[in-house]
Image 1 (tube, rainbow, N blue to C red):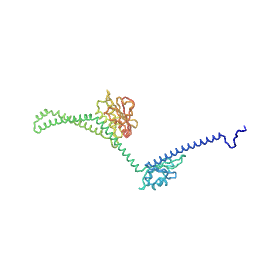
Image 2 (spheres, rainbow, N blue to C red):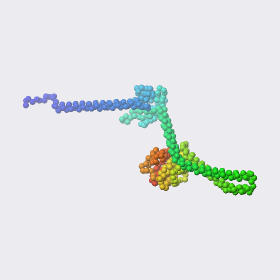
Image 3 (tube, rainbow, N blue to C red):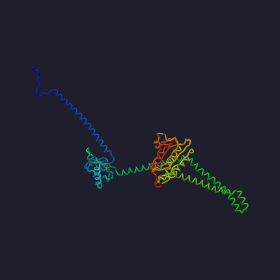
Image 4 (tube, rainbow, N blue to C red):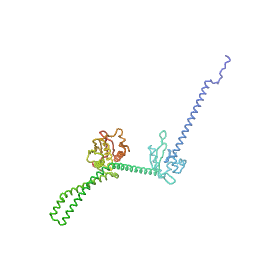
Length: 439
């Protein structure tokens, strides 16, 4: 017992040393983890700096970051390129000093308003360049820190000349789009006219043949009267003239002469009416809008479609006898032709084909509806029928542009074209703003 070693004063138990070593290991591990996170954050920061620098270098528009004191903190490379000032020179001055002196007060006011209103403010100012002030349109937006306090502003802008050029290009593109649309309307109208050529030829042939036949009759009557008047001038006796008058049947021919003249005039008037209808039908509908009778336009368009119909179709006009609207009658006539032609195509296989065209008013709208007793629009295709180049007709029978163009024309007139719901067959409804001047 007397040989046992006693702990000396100042020695620590093994358990304490183990705790110390464990704490050292944990501290070292924490340091290693912290170093790793720090390196990752430094790499992320470097990536963000590189990204920030690449953005500032690649931005073609003006971009200036302004401090709360109004000094330039950052600027895109485009600013240095235009002002011929290095980044260090830009960041050493106030933002307003980069612009023409006459614009500085307006710029200061805009910067103050953007900060106070916490909303973007637009102002035009002249950026100072070696060639002189260059007008730019600036958008000023306030920056805020994490506590919502104003930290400065961001100024972005583009040369006014570039903006005006962009507007000019946009306007030119708009004009080209309108021209292309007008061309589509004319092409669709030519397609419709192509389907009507046979009917037109027949319509013109009848009155022209009538005029031609009456002209031959008039020529024959003229020969008989010439023979009679020749005998009168030769001094023939009254008895001879009476006998010649009976032989030539002049009394009957006088009556026939009047009928021939009347028939020739009616035939000529019919040709004139057909030509006038063709002139109205071929009108491109351009120019200013005008007030016209939609019912009259519908009647002309329907008559021409029926002339080219492959079979006899009963067409019934119902509703108002006249309906005044404002627009381009040539374009709306094309809409009616498309609707009626589609209706005729839909009833081609129907035993007793019928198309009903109705004119009515509903509130502030003039309404034209075209309904047929065909098979109707297949389920699921209600919306697709207004898509360009979509058609349910056989190849070569439809362009797929009639309804899309009609839909666009209706929208341009402040109305709309839609498929009616319910009922047998297909029904299309054209709504136009009602002309209250004549209502």
